[in-house]
Image: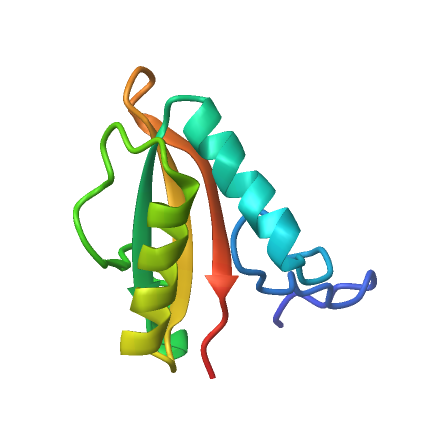
Length: 113
């Protein structure tokens, strides 16, 4: 006889990255988060993936990480260029911390269809 839970079925809702459980961020809030990534000295990286593969381990790089980039506008323009090239994909930004060799921040900026 299979195990019958009396508690109920509490499935975890799939969310997209760090801020996935919050309401969508405004453009200014997104810019503030990107500015924080840059201020920490982390390397911004733009990635994208089709929504059907969004829970996959690996997303595709838009370009190589922007090592040493200090200009917010450069990072934002690359995010928008990736979104224009792949309008049906999720586009996220990753702040890569070279010291700890890990992601310091990661969130979806544009959600695909």
